[in-house]
Picture 1 (tube, rainbow, N blue to C red):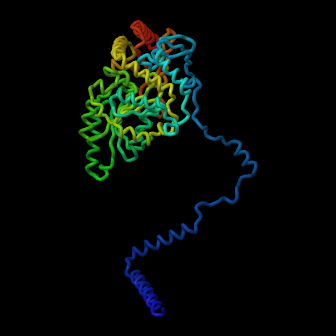
Picture 2: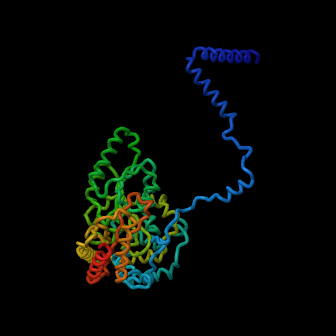
Picture 3: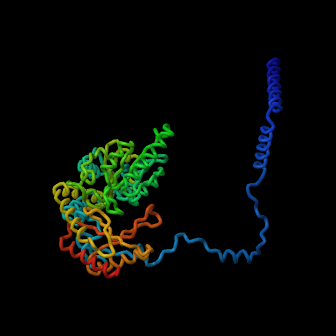
Length: 479
């Protein structure tokens, strides 16, 4: 044991000698830097992070006066009592062809009941039978005893109708695309998105925390410019590029503009730059195409060229909720990662049954889509040439926007002018509405507009009368 301890002591002395020798051989700047660091650490260890004021110079009376004078900042900003959100119109009865608003019956040009199925007897009977069988709601998400046989039937029917492998339904339309985007696109991924994208898409993008690149509305040259720029960046860092996913997010018919997206051009760019396409079809599903399958059928695009299609069931199907469809491995991922699917109570069975019956009607009577298209074209023609207003939206879009030709320079004044037109029409039994936005939340706030919604229930006389009254209202309010 003695020789072992002697060897250990000798080794320790040798290490100490090496340390002293290294200290003398080290450059002066190195020693100075280490000295400064040691002093800084000592200072941090023994200094207080803040100083407490032991004595106050204020008297007790002065303290009480300051406390009484202090006013906390308001929890929310002040809102005028005449704000439209606080003074809504009250509807009595079903908002179908005729709508009773504030006790006045009007022809409905404001509800997205495109196919007139909201008050359809077959749809109501199916919903009533389901109500008697299942009750009112589900009281649980899909993974917790919230999956009913009628949910699986609706998903199967939607997948077959859209000619995709699988579909998934959500209980809230807004949450559908807002949940689907962050289920796939994560921090570090790149999303190319049209600047006119609706608010639900914006919220989905925000939740994804992805890198966002906005291109000008329906401008494929601007989109390709951004794709080329990204291609150059990827070449600089190929390792990062291999793990970065890229998406293009667009709408079939844009809610905020009524314009159709140039899907054939997007598919070309998809394969050229190796990106994925997410398509939001809430306005085009049940509207475009020979059988109402949306923009892919309208343009004759293969459904497999689109990575994910999303739409709500609150417009053409006249129900509640939304759905996504695509390949099975894509859709199944949402069952594990779609927040609206995993954590919200599932769709009430009566609404799922109503949607199934609405699909039955759409499949049995495909002529309904041609009728809707003709009515949209007729209304678009009727609204041409209104002094002071111009139409935004395709001639076959069932939701048109009437915007001021020349802004007053104040959004508030523009909205009041348009509201004057809406009120004038309401007094003459034509129900219209202004398009509403969360002004402080919108990425690109659209200009104020009156939204005119066309449905199959409106007669030619309704369309002619409404256009005539809108022209009179514009002359009265804008002159």
